[in-house]
Length: 397
Length: 119
Image (cartoon, rainbow over all chains, first blue to last red; front, side, top):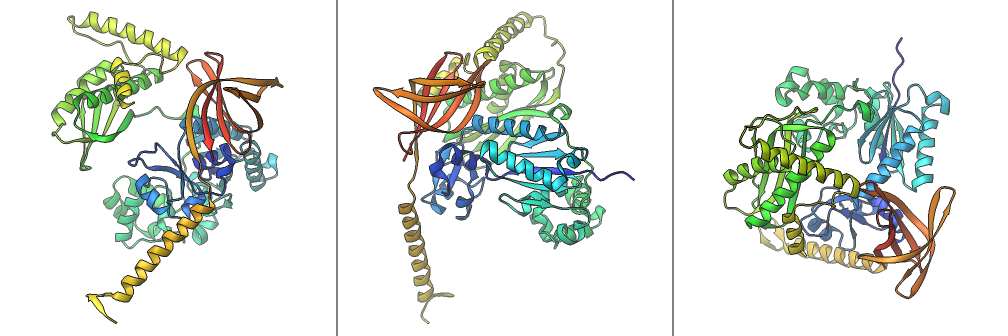
């Protein structure tokens, strides 16, 4: 008989806020909120458990958080610090097993099927991981153990913070299926609302619904939801090398103030296209479709794509397409947010076919960009930037 | 009970006002008890005395202006990159409870005081 897998899910507790509390110990025990910026239109990225007592949660607008918790400590986050800590945490997990999936910046899956016995069992091993995380970083994490990723991930959420919970196959009818449906991985706010309209409140009630009925309401994910609700998940723990290539690459920017200023809008668009192009080239990708997302001041959002033919990975190519979409889509309303993404990716871009007339321009342009990339690789991303972007930064003060 | 609108009594309005007032007083009291922290961005070159031992680097003292600060504790450390060059960041406690964020850029081989967490 095939042995059941043993999967561990490690979820860092209030990750960004805990890192900030370690950086400045005087913040320990206080309601700390880490935000993308301290302007009123940003959102809370992470809240310490003390802040959660006030009803603060990640994704809450900063202005609302300030009202709910006037004495809270608001800190502008330092993404590089969290990324570094996350990399080091995953290095630590790899000391226990080589099969580690970096699921997000603060969550990882570990397949410990073949190694758990070496540590005296899975629970003992999980205990050792928790101790090491605390010893090296002074941080707390919650661990869930299960025979697959869905059960392990659900388990880690059951006893937060600093918990260690096991959900075995035997626990599926008694513990897992009695949980509110919102606790199931893959069920977000919107799905939970739809399920509630169908009278589904627990995971068990979702498991009892027939697959065709779920497919009718949720489309292709209907079957996945049904399997998940029954505690069935055969997806493997994928190491970094096994991850599938990305389907699209994109960046977004929220303006500090809604704007109609064309110069500002164009320089932001250029900055976004430049970032996306650089990420494409760094990863060895090129894309055929450019999509522009615009959110206006009244929160109406439009998303328009264009596939002009040929693969793109250069700043100007992407900017030209995005700019054309912007010109057509702009409705003389102030803009709140711009987003640029490139999809339809090819992972080993072929040499582009250019018309005879513009061939020499693109050849020269590509050479310039190759030199810019070399300078950025050596001296950092700020080594060479578009002049229009420097001007915008200067104006912003 | 006197109603000022269908379903709204004077007692209900008063009770809600009292609850709101009590909540803001409670929050104010908590704020009084909790010292808040402000982070000041400095970005100032500094001199740092550093010990290199067992393959690790540990700043022990830094000089800002004329004042020398003895580092009593490294609270957090992390590494970022500027192209190929690592930047070593340290959050350190010096002169009481104040926390200073300092970093060594291996591109310029210079130390910078990045931020001060003021109490």
